[in-house]
Image (tube, rainbow, N blue to C red):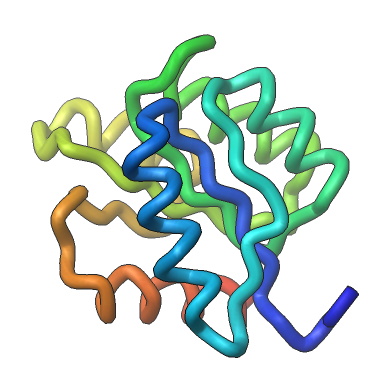
Length: 126
């Protein structure tokens, strides 16, 4: 295991989004995707197993959504930094997930360099 890389968990029920994020991050020499989850329960289990520096959470996924995942991750992996990655920009959704412990909120469709920069920044602060 290369401890010099920022370890990232991707949690998104859309396989296309998860695959694209995985491919994007694996092309970065200092980032490593350690797990990909498609629902809240899998996200929590994989976070406990892999202890990522950063978890990228879809706001709306099976099992209670990103808010539930964020709350549980705060409990089981308190050092993991959380980033929400969502198609939703309504204030209530953003407020709920930020209150659950998410540090950054990016909209799906954000430029790749912005996604990488946020994950890198969060990982370096972990």
